[in-house]
Image (tube, rainbow, N blue to C red):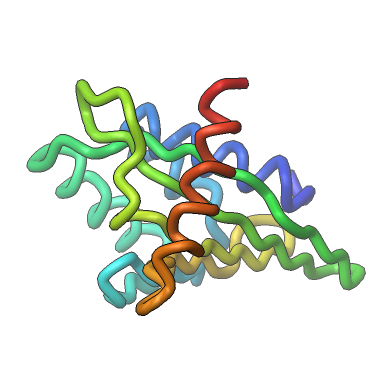
Length: 139
């Protein structure tokens, strides 16, 4: 599985189904995630264990995403997306949890970075991203 979009969609699906094993298997052996809080998790097995702990101990929100760009560089690809989260049992996005997501792939995921999209001092940018992501929810 080497297509960046396919890998990204599978990654988001595994998160939304709270499946740490399937999520981790999408990564290269030495893959890396950089979480929303800036934490780094290095290596497929560490990613698996990290997510097991999250899924077992926390009700996680569901991602709603929109891919903005995919660049293919031959044996490496870069994907950029925006994401919002819907809380468990909730029906609407949490604007304070919007994110910019970056995925780098080879045959599997090399790096997944999830960066807050808070747009400090620009509430209109948060509102615009919320509206854009609500369109994805409606699909």
